Image 1 (cartoon, helix red, strand yellow):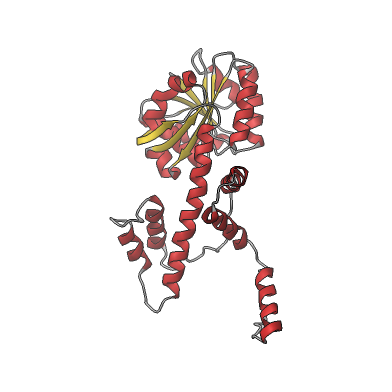
Image 2 (spheres, rainbow, N blue to C red; image 1 turned 90 degrees about the vertical axis):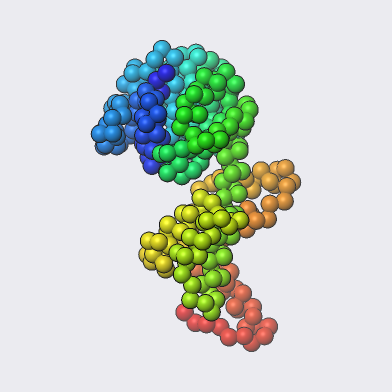
Length: 298
């Protein structure tokens, strides 16, 4: 089976290399053709347009999208639909909102085209050497592409979770959990830094990455960051929130499920972007008013 992959960002590029390593016949294209030329050097078949990619595939087309969530996915689907026929498969491997996935699946189903959502985790290294994949969609379509999914996934890192949207739903909750875990790790090192001990954070994170209860990929990434800079020099403490935790929180509210850790970790990211720190100014002003506490002037 041939597969077409559209989108050679960091994750898409790594997935294409992963497929190539597993002898999967992959054809790629990208908006910036320099990336296509670059990956050709690795032996991946690259073409200069979406129509050329479709023409290079088998009669039953399988197209994997690795484009940003939102409008870019809809726009790419609009580009693909006239080039596809009933029985073909589109895979969305990005971080799309599961509600968008359900909508897209229903629209494509009316045309006989299957839409499979594949939540992809593990970072760039995982995409390159063994991803964690969470699939949703019709059982027949997922069964057809399962050999590819199993081949590029890390051992025991693939699962089929049910109808359209379920793969992206599981990935959404996964990312909400990730926010909470990352926040806890950051806060832990903040306390260590404030302590009276002159600690080697690279060593701390190395030890915690080997045999501790909190070992794992995030801690190993923290160790790598400290191995590059003990003080994380040049990194500003501003953290983007890319959307998945917002959706997770909205789902918790819809289902009336308490999720305080995920909520606070999301709000902490919002706060990290607050250059004015107005709420802290308000707190200082109130403390001064009721207790005469000192105000620090800018």
